[in-house]
Length: 79
Image (cartoon, rainbow, N blue to C red; front, top):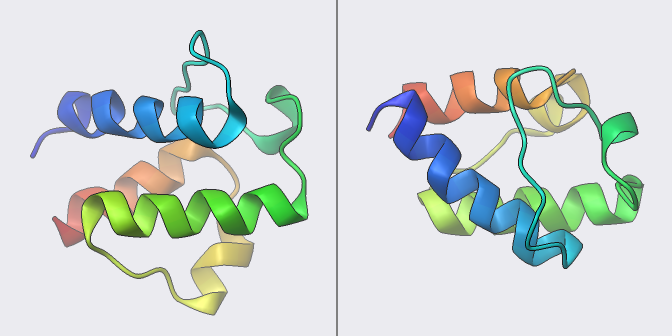
């Protein structure tokens, strides 16, 4: 799966979790860029991404990812 395919699926997950059909993310997107992305929503988002891609983030990864690009890097390695 290439990066573009990951983003297609990832954007659908973000849209579902945040209830915004217009939301799109890119490598530099952070929690500060998305309305409602707080710590609780972060956990919900990561669980939805794990389900979508059949992967599992470690605790260290969940707190160390600085942007969506780092998240996609990890997904790329795992799928």
